[in-house]
Image (cartoon, rainbow, N blue to C red; front, side):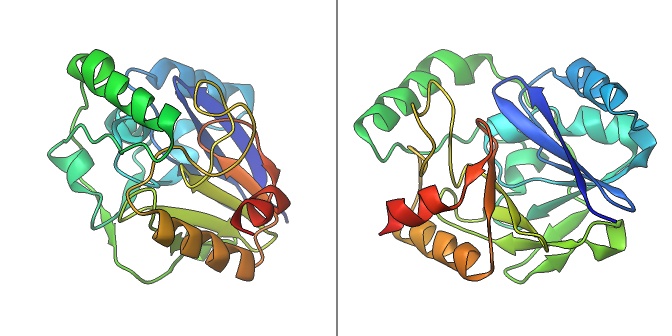
Length: 226
């Protein structure tokens, strides 16, 4: 049985519900999005309690701000890399630096105009991930959580056996971030980001599922790295 992929738009972010023999959610979305999350589940006939695990790709504010509400609704565990978990547990309003001219402008604008208004309900991280891989087989999804630093030091991606790669902000494909699909305009370490992408390519990634924008073929990333 394959994995059905259900995207749900939660504010600025798109989270992904993966339904195999079990149900796993990727990312926690922007603030105050629990009603949109519940409607998204209803649209695809998934009960909240079917969601058993929430994998958070990294600790930036727009990926974690509805995580506690989703955890309370579903009873799911939260999995997050040990370098990122303070963003949710403390919580911290983390915002990445820009690596393009537009990225630098937008990052500064977020710091000044958006972050003062953001509220992140703290939540406990149940499964603290290290620098190794974490199989989702126990949760009924044939895939692996793989460390993929670069956008942030503890970013992770989920790679399904069939090549779908859910990469958080390791790639972007939506306004006002990018006009077309490609590498992110924000990153802490561009060299590590490129290395992470090469690793995902070597592991058989075929389709990129970013948190911002529609899926696109991995060949676009391959060309960007060349």
